[in-house]
Length: 389
Image (cartoon, rainbow, N blue to C red):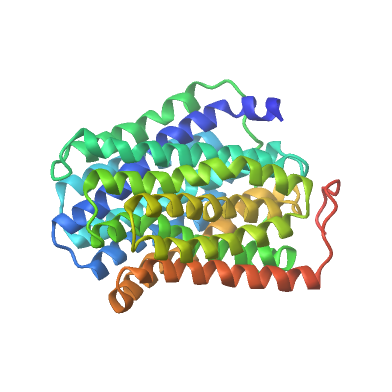
């Protein structure tokens, strides 16, 4: 396990830099949209644009990786994402921001596909959950740390957009100078929606639901915090404790999923996320500290669901299928994620701030019910099995 982690050090460092830039940009847009008097619905649509791009990027990237390899694909997409961050500072307009969010989503979809297929190439069924948990710890660690960058400059200025661009550009350095061998980039074996669903129904449905819930949580937390009257420093704390919760629970949940039936772990975790959402809604009526605590638990149970879903799916795949499967899962997750911010914004309009937690809790409860159904329909996969079912 240690050898697999150290062999991917450049990828992990690059991802950490990317997440610093992406997390800063995401929360900055949520705060700045309120300062520019964009409506909640317009902000939800802007944030959803990221996931429209994510969907398109997941479709295109596997073909690009098959032609030019992991490193060149990573470099091209990171450079484009860096440029998109700067455009937000130049054109402060909902339409321009929506377009740039789509570009950013396209780039990050490709970056995630590269990273996940790279890691799955190095993993076995006995180590996949743990290795992907390290990946998610790096991702969430960057996102959590990025929230405190909001205090370095006035959110009304262009400085923070420039900082986000610089961080994304710097992610290219470790990947470019690394001498660690990258995965073979011969043309991946195609694995479309129908084939992937036959291989892992729960992985596919879980990815869609998790995409919706986590997109709502990630994209609209700052907007939600603004509606209940939190200050910018308090918003930074709220978003970061949510992400830190995901970091804290990633490793133990990943390790547990390598030891037990991954579906059982997934089921317990997603139902726990639904309960945490209910608890957070109640806590929001009291002290801010209680809300922070519940958001920590919600992040700790919601964010690990993504790595559980992709680990469960890849348990049934061959190495040549993993790049294509990563792209397909990203498309499925992106499709769900498009509706997350929109659904939250609509529910918040009808129900007030409680709509934020109602949406997230309902999605996680639905995933849990489907997981129970799948456990009745199919026996667990032995950990030693490395070929598709």
